[in-house]
Length: 241
Length: 391
Ligand SMILES: Nc1ncnc2c1ncn2[C@@H]1O[C@H](COP(=O)(O)OP(=O)(O)OP(=O)(O)O)[C@@H](O)[C@H]1O
Ligand SMILES: [Mg+2]
Image (tube, rainbow over all chains, first blue to last red; front, top):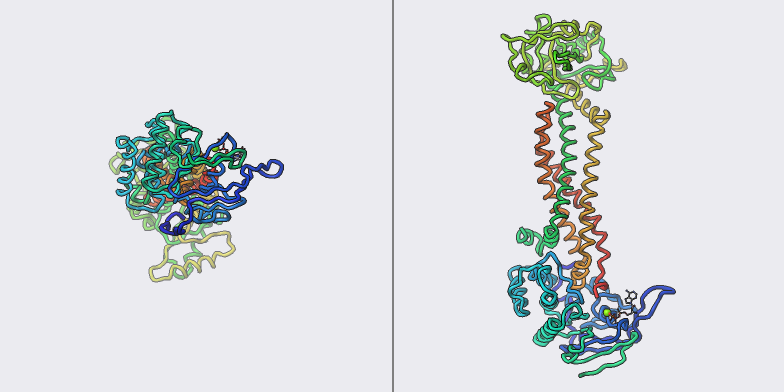
């Protein structure tokens, strides 16, 4: 299932990285059925950093997981790099995910793998076999994130900020078209949080990566190209600072 | 090790890394597999020695065909065969010679108060050709009344005393009020049926067992003429004795049937067979427990890998990789301990226990298969890894 990767995902010319139209989403069944998203429309420009804000329970994570192929689209349309996700087969979703990078609130590193090995996992998914090359690429990126002397540390021996930077490296090492980050700084102190986001932004700019980030941190807003605010499952504000 | 496995699998050996990361779990799993291996191997060893000892007992004889009572499932069990049957058999074309063969257990009340049970073979001292090459030379020396050749490995007797027995140094001992003279020793190998073998003449046999009739041996041994077709002679004898309540079998077949009977129909054999099954089940359950706990503990990691675009086959691969590694790592201490136990068991009981290459290979293959089965069951838990839960 994960061997033939190469270009089973043809680039669709001039398609925006993300285009959401008329997206509704429901949780639960029968009596307990509850609508979490109402008619969401959102188109994102390539290479931009979009910040998603809003009170707790407003649907930010739900939107993110739908765009990130982590949840099935029920109603409406999500186009990712020109591919419609509504009704897509699981096998295709697996392929689409390989074009994405995820940074979670918790670092979600594999505790049994070293920093370098964790980053290598972001490369191996593309079917790269050359281990020496993977090791080099992972080391290079970790060094760029200031972890050159922590390559062979297990996550348990790294600080929170260092772990999150490893997670950033893992998300970016495969040169994803889009990076999704859900409150990546929530578990960090302000200083290391800002360091992580600055690095993410800088690397994204260098590589032309589109970034979607959910955050409550006001200082991050200054770095955003666009700020989208949600309330009760709807987009209520859309600004460029 | 990690690099080697990585090269072997073509990706980071995540299963291996997970295993060595939690050392206690690894140790528990290895102990579990080793324990199951030891259980299985010891049972197999005892079964094997049962089988061996049966083969050895038939191997003391040299005949082509054996005529026994229908209910004579082993050499010592069952009814007798009327001696006149021997003469009927001799009349069948192709039969060259025949000998009545007596078997019974003789108890020696040793001076130390315990008993040594000799599986006693009574043979015609003129017919040493019905004994194995090793035993044949003893036959003429049994002509002397009350002389015997006893097992060098007989249980309960000081090995040095036994080793010292010879023509110049006979040993006198008393069985059923009769004083026998051991004139030499044979290599039998303790069995399950008795503590050792004893070879005597048919005359002496009847002095030891006065209530056994000379007209009713336990079996009749037959040799086929060199120019006769063994299968045809066997068929002719079977036809001759059809409906008489006798079974006519090649000696080798008799040994095999005896083995099958003792290992599958007798409680001892059944218990050991059952022990093997229990060992396999214990192994499967332990490995399943360990692997499924490991999957449960790493659901978040697996969900993350799913989000990164890894497919189901890679997670199956991780679990099966772990299963195979556990199988190999557990087998190594398992086989070493089993080998030591075999040595101890052999030394203590004199039973012919032997760890053969075939057994080792079969148990290794079985271990890997059982581990894969456990792994395959444990992978059902993978379905619970949902990347949508990660945010
Ligand atoms: N798995 C689920 N099952 C049922 N309801 C859910 C589930 N996930 C989210 N919801 C509901 O959907 C709504 C939107 O949730 P979502 O997690 O998208 O909010 P959010 O904006 O990310 O909030 P927060 O800032 O707390 O992370 C909430 O009312 C939540 O209770
Ligand atoms: Mg959320």
